[in-house]
Length: 83
Image 1 (tube, rainbow, N blue to C red):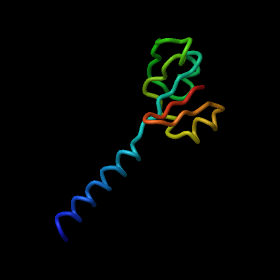
Image 2 (cartoon, rainbow, N blue to C red):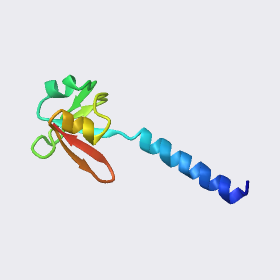
Image 3 (cartoon, helix red, strand yellow):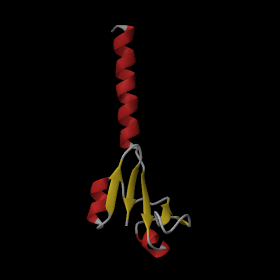
C-alpha cells in the first residue's frame, strides 16, 4: 500500500472510533431525573437555561435514546439531550 492510502485508512478508523464513543450531554429539570438515567453526579449550573447537568449518565448514547425518554435532542458540534 502507498503511504497516502495508509494515512487515509488510519484517519477513517480514528474518525469512526471518535463517532462511536461520542458522548451525549444530558440535562434534566431535577437531580432525581438525572439519577433515573444513570447519572453519577448532578451539576447545578444555570437551571433556567439548560437545567441540571446529568454528569456520568450511561443510558443515553444517541438522539434516538433521548427521544425514547421523551427528551428534546439538539445535534451540532456537541449532542445535547434535554429531559
